[in-house]
Amino acid sequence: MGKPHRLPEIEKEYGEPLETLIPRRLNELGNMQAVAVELGVSMSALAQWCSRNNVKRRFVYFIEGTERVAG
Image (cartoon, rainbow, N blue to C red; front, side):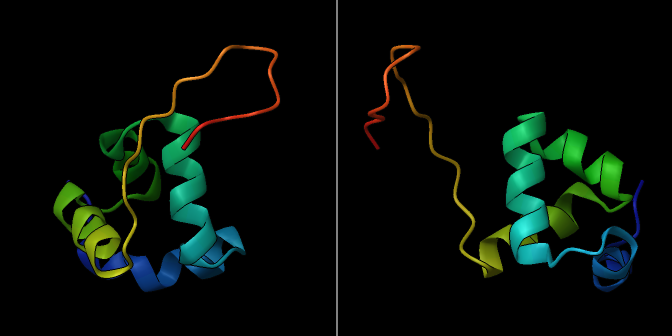
């Protein structure tokens, strides 16, 4: 289980603000559990951070090779 108080330390460790790091890793890894494990925080701490910072999950369907993505 991760430590919720680690979130402020993560920016220093990764050299990137949480506002860009967390959404980027969520997109790359595809789920909150994987990101929480990677960052060493609890799922609830990550979910609360996302909620407070208005990070939302959205599914996007597209035809591979097209430039236009409906959102």
